[in-house]
Length: 124
Image (cartoon, rainbow, N blue to C red):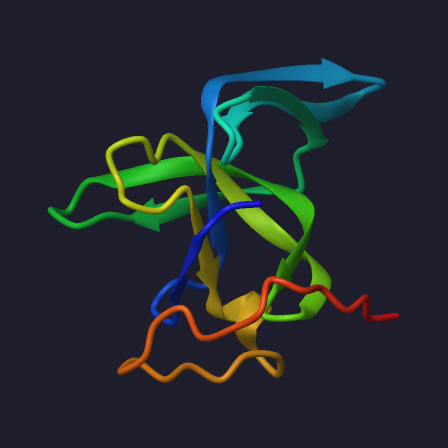
């Protein structure tokens, strides 16, 4: 479980990753990376690459990132969604939730914080 920041200015969600390594398996592109969970435990993740995106960063430096799919639950709403894999160690939140996941699921009130349950209801 991670505390995430909702970012209505970002299309795609993002997750903090370390030791990002791209490789091919069965003729497909994959990526392997480490995440550190909220207990401090390092977990190795391996996912198929869905696509690559160019991300515009503050200061004008563009960044090319791979996109993978994760099942995610925010405020009781669960669904599979795309995430860019990036080093976010210098940022406050390990996970950023973009508007593609939020659309039709989450209403943002920018004046409030930490108001949703961490309970997850599975959507079919």
